[in-house]
Image (tube, rainbow, N blue to C red; front, side, top):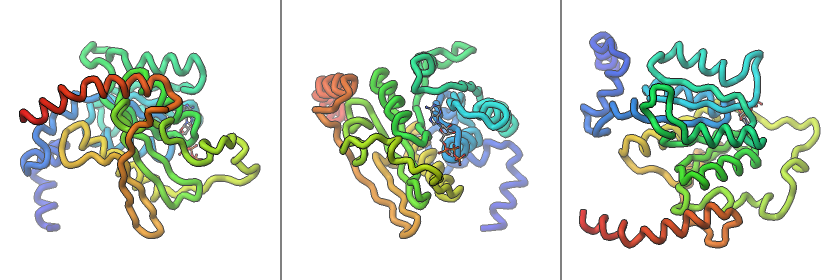
Length: 278
Ligand code: ATP
């Protein structure tokens, strides 16, 4: 196996040839389509920055990056600098903003619909949420419900030993407000849960695994191979990976979600007929 890998390294000077091998081996029908896709990543921290790097190495067409934080320079500009060095072919857009403010939300929503500077791409194909708080997740949920935009959510637990990814298709699967986390459902203010002086744990390994699961699911969704996971959990202490599916809640508190559910049900007979005819 080592010999084969090394000879491939020598033969394949084109950085994409290893990726194109996925096509030659019959895993992906048309890998090159990756260049046509646009992905938005919200939150360029432990999970988001790793996910952005993976998509950049995979040759994604366009990446839109959102974060309000700075590391000397803005996190999104720092990411653009690093990523353009890794793969100059990716069109990178930096949005240093807080998506939970009125202005930030407008810019966020507008950018998800907007044409890229070369006028080639319209909108984005997928949104990846890599934020670390409930409020921001609810805002991503709101934007995606309004736009009927498919997105994937990710999270790492406060003790850093478990995480999850989840696929959200407005109208078809549960949205983030359909099944709120237990603490929210019980009406506790998230801010009161943050204990003063107690810092959330962070493990680059758990974040790296969750970023890998997230981007793997994104690639399967975009390039249409394998099975896209509706929900995949990761418990690092037991190496346990639970999966499940969540249907939308007809009584969801989010009006845009309820509207998307109605549209989904209206189109269901036509979809079923088309699937039967295949
Ligand atoms: P660390 O404490 O290890 O530095 P972090 O602050 O990078 O972690 P992560 O959980 O790794 O936190 O990443 C979450 C990212 O999401 C952060 O970069 C944070 O700035 C960003 N983020 C959270 N809420 C928002 C928001 N409302 N708008 C834009 N970005 C957000």
